[in-house]
Length: 263
Ligand code: NAD
Image (cartoon, rainbow, N blue to C red; front, side):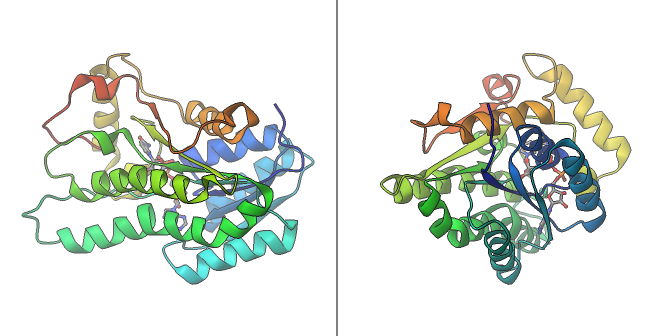
């Protein structure tokens, strides 16, 4: 499989699943536009991708919770490469609160602004270019969109909305030749919880308990999610749109209905 001459935008490319996706698409010779709010991390990933491929890599430092930054990211990509073939919306933040928590509303606003609104904004601004290229979009949801647990409204709600939004926008763009799908990972040992201010100790304990709890008894590698994104972006998935691809080591099978689960 090759993405030679295909322009792939990846948000959240500085870390975790977005980073793994950037590296995977670079290995497949894609032309890359990498977006992240964290300049240091983005520099490192950009450098790594440039060492892997002859194809060009554009680096855009942006806070995609701001519309002006989203617009600039898309405009810079089109100015530089003239087209967009694949948009991978991977940037996301974690935040969990319950209905009785005093800061619920501010956390809802923050989490929604990145996980949901920025995903909508990225597609909104990239849509004309995607229609021109008959391209595709991969949104990153979470298996938590399908589960209910205590005190976890903002993140899980944002991801359920991403799955639902994906289906709507797939319907809007299907007759224009643009496919839109989502991926719902289970536990992937990235820095997402640390980025949300959770201590290393709690982070490690949570991922260790997930690895025992999920039916397959192992967490998911970021590269496995990246491979799923590559498949969905390829011609092999030409008949797939509006779908949510779950990669969760069977977590959703477990019927999780209570407890304080992360991610
Ligand atoms: P991560 O924290 O390692 O990476 C997320 C990246 O997004 C970071 O580089 C961060 O700087 C960037 N980002 C955050 N806010 C941004 C903003 N406003 N503008 C631009 N960039 C921003 O996390 P990850 O685990 O790789 O998460 C990637 C996606 O996968 C997220 O959408 C997350 O919700 C989803 N996900 C993760 C897991 C998991 O277990 N790690 C499970 C299911 C879904």
